[in-house]
Image (cartoon, rainbow, N blue to C red; front, side, top):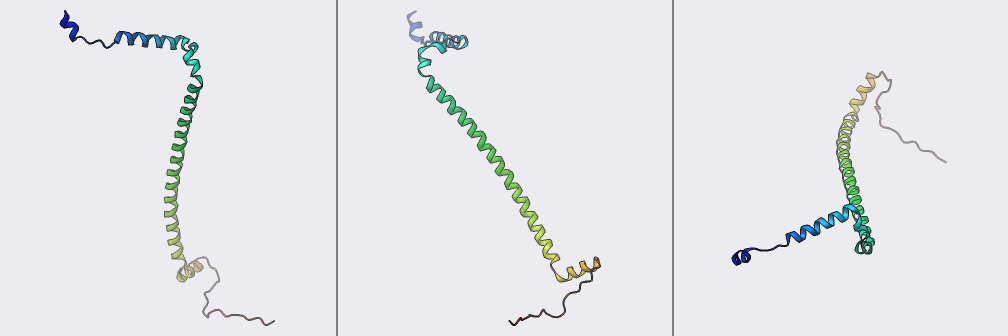
Length: 124
């Protein structure tokens, strides 16, 4: 019998079960709100709640900004590729021979200059 007591270790499980059960019952029936300890630390509890709400809101705001940044970066990549395509097309159409072909296709009576332009001087 004494050997059983030596090998048996008491962790106080019954006492912790009772205190946990009592705490749960206090929370469920609302009597914890009337205890002096709760009322004494009410401002601190509200502060922690407000701080938690602020952290959650800050996290959502940071994720929203991250999504917008990613979307903007994708749009920037698309616009850069479009700008390169447009500039290469412009480079092709900028040649004098291509302009001449375009004018002929549209039946415009414009002709390229044969002589270089001349400067005009005005005497006062």
